[in-house]
Amino acid sequence: MHRLMAGTLDEVFDEIAAYKAGVDRRLPMVVLRTPKGSAGPAAFVRGTTFIRSPW
Image 1 (tube, helix red, strand yellow):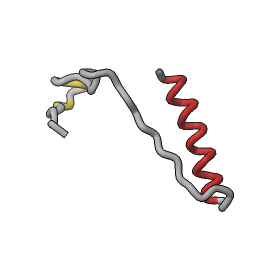
Image 2 (tube, helix red, strand yellow):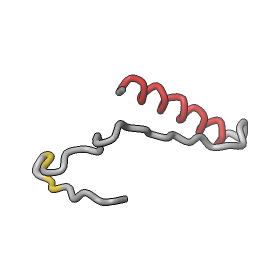
Image 3 (cartoon, one colour):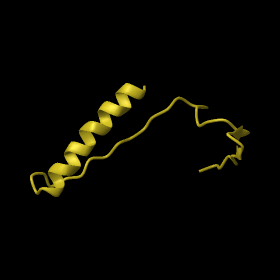
Image 4 (tube, helix red, strand yellow):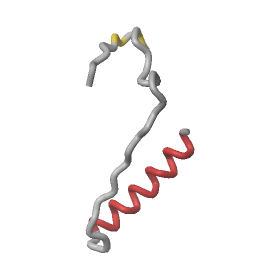
C-alpha cells in the first residue's frame, strides 16, 4: 500500500504543478479507500489517546 500511495502522490504533485503553471485547468483528487475497521487503534498510540468519532 505504501508504494502505491507514494506513486499516487507523485502523480498528484505533478498534476498540481501543471495546474499552477497554467497547463491544466483541473485539480486532482485523491480518494483513500480502506477496508472496514482499519481506521486505526481505539486506545493508545505513542501515548496519545484517540477518541473514535462517528464521522
